[in-house]
Image (cartoon, rainbow, N blue to C red; front, side, top):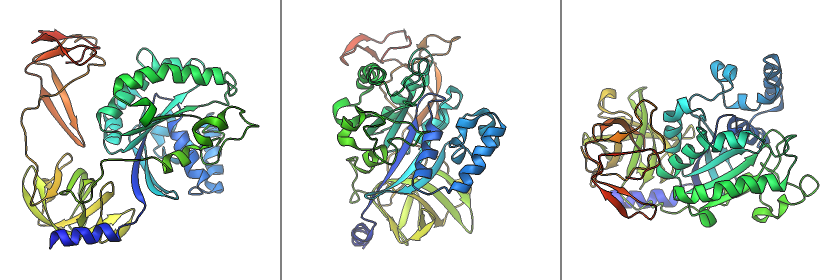
Length: 405
C-alpha cells in the first residue's frame, strides 16, 4: 500500500523540480545584494519597500547596501554590513521552484555557511571583480577557497561563478579583468573536485546595477559578454541547470534541520530521497522511533505529499520534542539507516589554528554531515595521500595544512 501511495505522490507532484541554491563567497563580495537584486527584479519586493531601504542605508552612510537589507533583516547584520545566519527565500522560475539561501561570508560564521551549503543542490559563488577585493578573497585568509571546498565536500553538484561588480570604476566591464579572475579560479575549482567544463559556469554581472541578473546583458553595456553561455542571464542559467541523482522511488531519507512544538511536534528538513505523504508511518533515526505524518507544509502551503529535493515541515504524532533534534534522519520504516560511532574519512586540511599547527591523533574537531554537527576526536591517521590520491606515507605522526590524509 505504501509503495502504491508513493507512486501516486510522484505523479501528482508539481512537475517543476525544486532546487536549493546557496550563495557563497568572501565577505563583501555582494552575496546579499545579489539575492536582493533577484527578489526585486522578480517583483517579490515592491518599489516602496526599496525606497524605504534606500533611505535607511543612506542614514547609515551605506548607500550601496540597500539591496542587501532585503535579505539581512536583523539590525546587527545591517549595522555591520555582514550576514550572520543563513537567510532563505522562495522564488518561482519558468521550469523550477527555487529556494535561495544567503550564507554568511565572514570566517567567524563558517558553521552557518556549512548549515546553508548542506541543504543546497547548487551554489552561486560570488566573486568581486574590484581590484584588491578579488585578491583579498582568493588569496591568504580569504573565504573564497574555503567556501568552494566546503560546497563540494557537502554535496553541491553545480556551481555558477558570478564575477560581480563588473561596472565598478576600477573594472569598467574589462574583459581582461574578467578573464584574470576566471583563470585564477579554474585550476583551484578543479582541485576541489569540480568538473570545471561540465559543472562550473562563469558569468559577469552587476548585482547593484541589476545587469545580467534577470534580463540578458546587451552589447551596448558590454560588447563581449552576450557571447558567453549562449547569452543567458543568471536566472536563466539557474532555470536550465541539469541536476542528477534524484530518485523519488528510493526509500525515504529526510535530514532534520530543526524542530519545534505547535499543536504537536513540527519537523523542518529536506527530503534527500524518496517521498513522504500524509498518513505515512516513518522512522526517526538513530532512535528508530516510529511516528505518523499528520500534515505536510511546502512553501507555506499544506500539501498531501512531497518528493526529493523539497524543503518541508512535517507535523508528526507519537513524538516528543526532546526525542528528535537537528542532525537526525527520517527514514522509511522498512529501510532505516545504520548508526556509527567511528568513521573512516578522507580529509583535506585547509587551515589549522595558529597555536595548533599540527594535525595528529587526539585532535578534537567538529564533524559535519548533512545537518548533523557532532564533536569528534581523531584517534589515528592511517595514511597521507599525494596529489594523485595514492598513499605517499603510512601512519604519519602528524599532518600540516595543505595535506590530504
